[in-house]
Structure formats: C-alpha cells, structure tokens
Image (tube, rainbow, N blue to C red):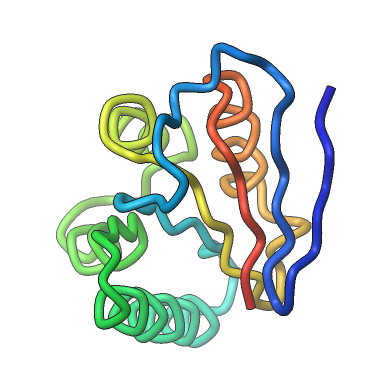
Amino acid sequence: MNDYHTLGNITQLTTNDPANRMTHLEPERIYLACPYWHKDPIVREERYQLVTRKAAELMLQGYQVFSPITHSHPISAHMPNQDHDFWMKQDYPYIQHWADEVWVYAIDGWRESIGVGLEINYASSLYLTVKIIK
C-alpha cells in the first residue's frame, strides 16, 4: 500500500513494503525527474533550464543529483529524435542502481508526462520513495 504525505512544498509517496532499500533517513542520491517532451522546442528548452537550475539548487543543499534532462538534452541535439523506450533504457539504470529516491520536479506538464509516469512507476516497483517537489 502507498501513502502520500505533504510537508511544505514536498509531497512524498512512501511504500509500506519492508523491502524498501532505504536504510538511512536522509537521501543522498536523488534522481530528479521532470517533464521534457513538448512539440514546441522553446518549451523543451525552458524545461531543460528549469530542471538544471533545480538540480544546481539541490546540489548546493548537499544532495548528489542526477538530472536525466540536464544530461540528455545537449546529447539529443547530436542524434535523430528518439522515443521514450530509448531514453528510459538510458535512465532506468540510474534509478535502479544509483538513486536513493526519485524526486519529481512539479513544473507544468508533469502529470501528463509519459516519461515522468514511467519513472514514477519504475521507482515504485523498486520500492523507492518518490517525492513531488516544487
């Protein structure tokens, strides 16, 4: 069973499964998800800038952050368009083998984002905590 808790500007989804691999209270390694794809390239660029600033903010607070959009946006300019399956193959190992928690940056479009939905579902299947942040 999953429970949602709200604290300030963070909504936390926690699992009641004892197999949750978190063994410490404060996460160190954050996988920072956010929506990216939009038909308008200006919106994609804005989302890239927003999540990159948020990643920097979290790093300055002491977290280790992997932001797949910050990582992949510049790379995507050097290849033909790829689908969600391609990008999820790049991103899932960071969720599975590296992240303590998955945080979703709740910018416009996050609820409708296919990629964010896939990342949340994958993290949940691994019993990782998922937080929605602003």
